[in-house]
Length: 278
Image (cartoon, rainbow, N blue to C red; front, side, top):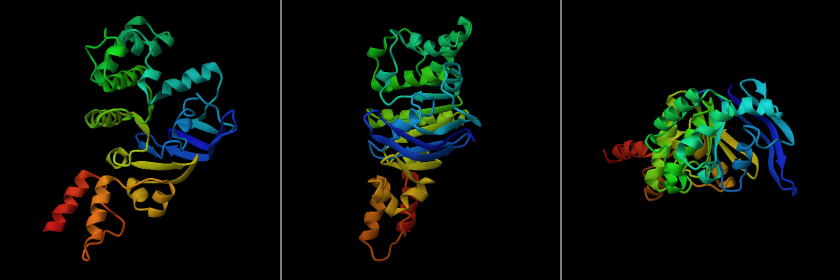
């Protein structure tokens, strides 16, 4: 077990209850999606994963060790769990790309040679080599997102947590970011993603948790989640567009029934369509 949230409850200072008895487990090598509408509590939960927020009750377990909140412990745990914010402008603040990516390793008091090596490797991994001297405010939204990811990669985390990684990106930019996350996972990094985009979830997640009004109301594979109409309705979510397409076909035909198990990705839709026209 890489990361576990046990009975996490949290309220903001104004009394607003954001999380209520949340339990979640992430295994090494997983790509986990936390699915829920805006305001469900996804970002609040993510800020608990590396100690930015401290729960009123419950605990976060990382590699079998309880997260502690003294400065030394937080530095240790934040090297293991890196958080990429929804808006890269909340994360990028240095005057140049290389200075921003170097910020974390420099705080670890690593030798300058090691810092430079990490910066170079991180920018290579996200496809931003050659942008070292660029000012971040001259970059596109997708490029800023990649620099924010590089800044976390330079810390060499075991787990990366992404809050709405495709927010604000055009479809092509979103696709590039999702492909990058898949590559990082293939390279050994455990990935946790929050999203309200039901079309993306079946493409990458091997496990899905559904968060609604601060509570986990379902978990399982994407197939488990999207086959559960009661759960989807309760969470105020929709089916992926591909599933809705085949749902429409089903509703217009007396001979076709998917029993609630519609294709969820383009690949599945293509295979299903071929079977229907044979």
